Image (cartoon, rainbow, N blue to C red; front, side, top):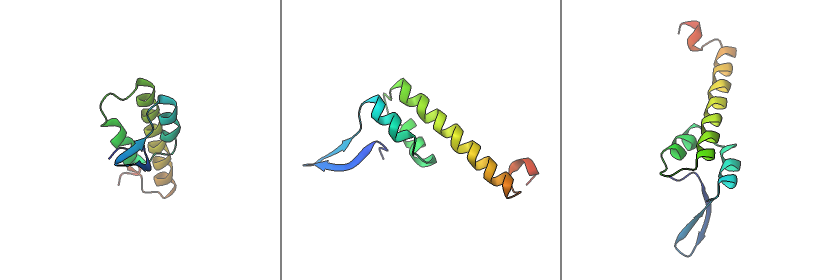
Length: 78
């Protein structure tokens, strides 16, 4: 799966975002699975890689806060 595919098809070719700025914009909306898929792509631009890593940190932080609010996070010993 390529998370940078646009969903559009031109003939038999699936279109995707190629330049770094478009990809960075996409990353802002990625979930965990899309981030993992992006990290698996060969030759990912350095700035896009950094954006994916930032997005993962944000997702992890948000998840930790939600779990903490529910009193079921790992810091609670469960």
